[in-house]
Image 1: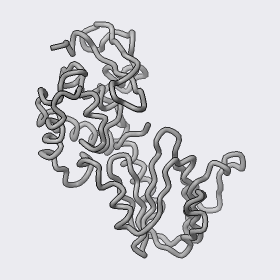
Image 2: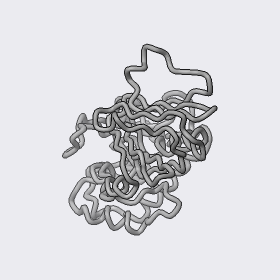
Image 3: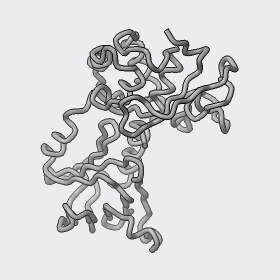
Length: 265
């Protein structure tokens, strides 16, 4: 599942293609909004909150989408189109007058309505470390409030902090030397949240740094533990371990850790 930094980068790409432009065509190919016609609307802005993408229009309406596991966006320049074979996968089409067209493909979440209503859909989320003003104190308090909950599960809860997914949860635990099942109430939440903000912002804004947590862009060396089960730890050489499911996680995501760098306490 894409994480907050990838959605942030996606919004920047759509912003360059669509913001300030008037649509010659705008269709939502989902049953709930199949009758909507966005032609003539001007795209005002693209916003993100965690993994959620919001496209604002000039009539106080907003398109809310989420990629989850299957979704993606592609932008083609004026006069071009996507291949015929993938057209059934289109869920959103936003075509600019004399300009590019953005296609939302296989998007599992497509909501459209007044901006206030779309903002309410994401009001349950925690603070976003990629927002211009990130409430780090609230983020840290939310972490500590989870008390006995394993920190690996807390970092995946978008109600605590919006944006990090499985990759960042695992890599942050390694970088802070935390055994993934450490109770959330026992961690230095201020330092953890500060590291989360710094690393995700670096990933989202520095060219070539997207989700490279080690600083090494060579294949197989971009992550400390995520996806490296059975391989030697890049710091100490201990074999990286993995379990197949994070407790309480409905998506049954994996947890990786180095037993030496992240000892059980």
